[in-house]
Image 1: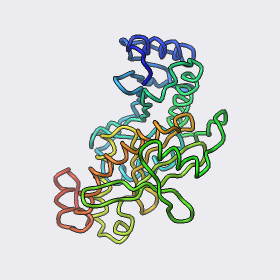
Image 2: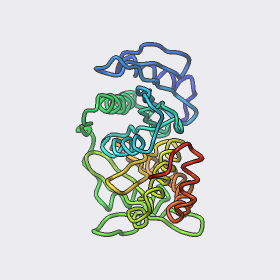
Image 3: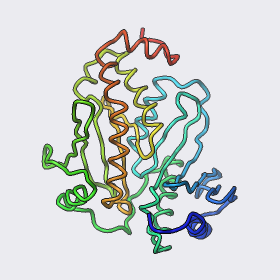
Length: 292
C-alpha cells in the first residue's frame, strides 16, 4: 500500500464515493452506506486495515438453507462475470453479494483511477444484484498475452507452468501434495481456479457429493476474494480479477487467497468423497438429512 494515513485514505475514498454514487450515510470514518445504482438497495462499503469491502445483503431465504439452495447459489456464482460473488453466513438464511479490493491495489496517486476502480466494482455489484449480465469494462487496456501473464505470475512469486491446450497453471502446495490452479483471461477478467477433486466428484456417491458441496460453501464463505462455484457436476474455487486489478500485486493476493482455501478444503474433501458413512455423519451434524 502507498504511504498514506488511514484518515487520508478514508478522505480520498469519501470524495470518490460522493462523486460516484448516492451516499446515503457515512456511519463512521471508513464506513459508508450507498445506494446501489438503479435499485432501492443499500450497499455497505468499508475501508478496513488492508481491504476496501463492498457488501449487499441479499433477501433472506424463506426456508432453512439446504443442499439444493446451496447448489443453486454455486451455479449463480458461476454465471457472475464481475468480481462480486455470493457468500453466506455459514448455514444461516442470510446471504451477501460481496466484493473486496486489497488496499495496495488502489492507485492512491490518482483519484481518477481510484474512482474508475470503485465505480466499476459498484456497477458490477449493481448489475448482479439486478441479475443482469455484467458487461466487461471496455475502458481498460488490451488483454494480456500468455507471456505477459506468465511474467506477472513470476513477479508475484507464483511461477507458472504449461498446462493442457497451451493453458497456464500454477501449482499450489498442499500438505504432502500439489494441486494445479488454472489461469485464464477472458471477458475483461482474469480467472484463477482450482477444480475440487474433478475425477472423484463425478463418480462419487450422492451423499459424498452433497457433503463436499456443503464443505465448499462453508470454506469459501470465510475467505476474502474466493468464490465457490459449480459447473454442472464440477466444483471449483475461484478468484476473479478485473483488468484494473490485474498486476503482480493483484495476482499475489488472488493466489494467496486461493491457496489458503485449497489447503482448508481439499484434504477434508478427500475424506468425505471416499467415505459415504463419514459424509452422512458430516451432513447430519450440520442438520442435513441423508439422501433417500
